[in-house]
Length: 321
Image (cartoon, rainbow, N blue to C red):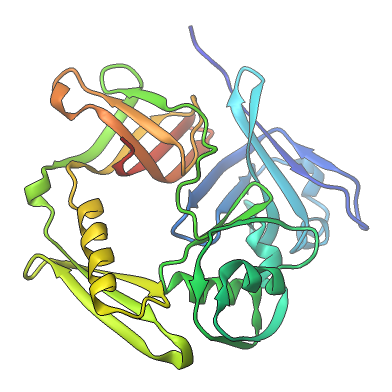
């Protein structure tokens, strides 16, 4: 049975135009990951969209306009992206770039100076009203963020391994994998995996060194190292850990988390079942049965075009069990 690829792109009603719904496009590419701060989408409209032949494209599609992207098969559409236009090309075919709700935080100015406090207190100060958030219970050191945007503050936190991303319209801070993910999605190498760029690593193949840094009040820092000689360095940040022995204990615990066997790389699957980062992928391989397991999904790239092609490139992370 052949399934028909379908798409629906909705540009919400604005002061200059009513709701615009486009059912035909050249391509859509959506990239999402907890590592990237901002999820993005690129829409390329078909050359023969006659509605726009005699109109100024940028007067119709403007920066900041809300957009939703639905993809699927046989009218079974799923909302795959929600956000705002960030850039519109002047050429044909029309290329529209979009950011998720991080777009709003890139526009929101902040001027914050705080003594040692909890991460949630900082987020309360910098996030504009109306945005929901879920923040890890983390103590942070003295922070000063003069004349910058809320997104820049989150970018600074990310440099200290406190990651932020939007899940739909909710901001998640300091929680890479939450507990509210749906049931794992099964990917069987002999059934629904189109291609694979995975490499299997045994525990002894993972050569790593943890460099743990604790930020103390007044900007002081405490550093501890643990791991393999000449291993790949992983810089991890902590706050208000005042004893080197305690910091070393945390570094050892994180070393054990990284020192696990599993897959490194990605798989390419069909457009359904749809997955997103933070979910779990159940990997089944009859050729290598010892390599089956449950893995977190770190990144997903969705590619939809009129060739026709509808694929998901799924980057796997550590084992989830």
